[in-house]
Length: 249
Ligand code: ADP
Image 1 (cartoon, rainbow, N blue to C red):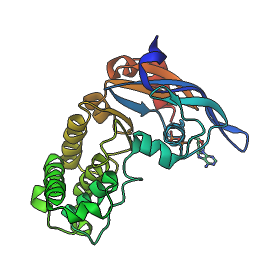
Image 2 (image 1 turned 90 degrees about the horizontal axis):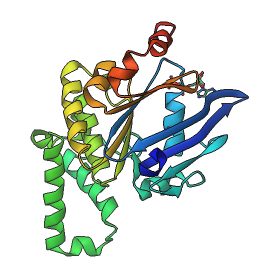
Image 3 (image 1 turned 180 degrees about the horizontal axis):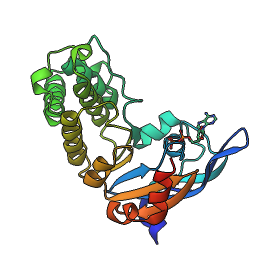
Image 4 (image 1 turned 180 degrees about the vertical axis):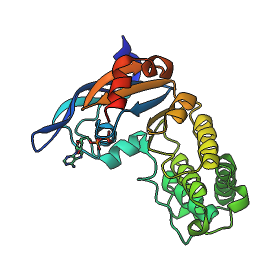
């Protein structure tokens, strides 16, 4: 049973805006440990599905189940606390703090140890170790002492990923992680996402089909608010209906 092994699944997901069905009866199963892409031509409903999954929008109809729990009525902050975390929105990066301090603040948010935390040197050492490990994991060691505001665009995104990873979420969702990036940054962020996906589940909306082909195990193609095709990239990209939907956009 496909839905039973899904870490995140939607059933009959529908969102109407003033009577217009932006998303219409979408059934979606995201399997644990996969990198799952949502693709489709402009206006297909990708962003709306993404916002529904992360609870930034409330569905007109349908249910969403995360780790066996119905989260349809759960608020976004609580969903994030449960481990379904959206990168680039929820992660606050403070422009006038250094890379190191941004990551320390993010780790602190997870720690919930209050002032006791700072009274213990041993805890402080551990915080610093964890911060440096995260900074290294996202390739920012050389930038640790730089203010976030000074970072080049792709590095800023890497910092946002680090602050999200500080929460150690089992499921990470990215809305167009490569938007506005050059080839070099795309390569670097792809490698990073591939590495952080080990032991985690990643869901991403992505326009760049080369990235999807290279990175994603599962692809759901949306068009006009409905699912057009599902499978690996090779199978969906050879589907005649998918080709037609992209040609027509
Ligand atoms: P995609 O991300 O695939 O480009 P969207 O989910 O942004 O598609 O949009 C799907 C459809 O829903 C589009 O026709 C869009 O105009 C419409 N839509 C999205 N958000 C709203 C909104 N807040 N109010 C009205 N219509 C919306």
